[in-house]
Image (cartoon, rainbow, N blue to C red):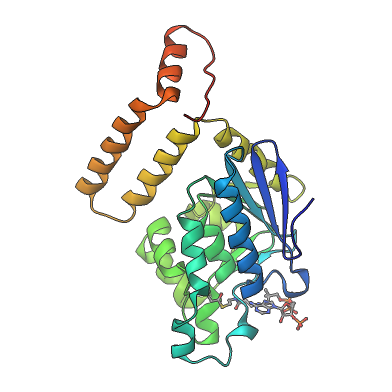
Length: 258
Ligand code: CAA
């Protein structure tokens, strides 16, 4: 296990595991922690050997939100001049697949961090929620937007307007998480899913992610045109030639990321 204090980084084959490590504050996402997370992701982006990222917290808390103690006395002007919340969007647009492994509290900015990832694997003890309304604000790191896109209007309204917490099982029923596993194995489940994704040809994985995120951002016909362009572009890659040739020759493809 290497890395700096607030983010512990481990490399497992073609996966990077990033663990939020601020236990005394239930991994509240202060500036220092999010700085380290951003730096770790910047390094991973440049490292061609890493094909997928798992972000986890501890068993007790994925993250209990943005750090309330860093913002309780701020003005609107100060908040809007602070690039902090943009880091959630940067994670959302990260070019390699990302999976949140969530146990314990995933509240406010913590829930938003998980939502910014491509997939969520939850432990049976996970608790999701956007409690910002209970402290006089609204989600500011994508919660209203990503929840509305993921769950639809009515469900997003309920969660954001009541601030109520949902269990892992309810989150699964709502479609908020991909799968739920026992506390003892949720991280392994997340790593297994990440391995499955990391084994895919990376240029195709990147194109797939780009297309899905784009589809959430634009109208249907723009999204379909963009998908088709990305599909066509992959025909200039070695991996497409190899993947299709291997199919025809009835053998396993060897992808090189080119
Ligand atoms: N910010 C700062 N500190 C936090 C925190 C947060 N979001 N969440 C927990 N902590 C700190 C507590 O202040 C406490 O510190 P001290 O020991 O120094 O008092 C420590 O973590 C442990 O927390 P609790 O004693 O409260 O633990 P608990 O088990 O009794 O309760 C909890 C756990 C229900 C998660 C509770 O801590 C809680 O409600 N936290 C805040 C949740 C929240 O409102 N999150 C939204 C934040 S705003 C936001 O995220 C905006 C946005 O959209 C980006």
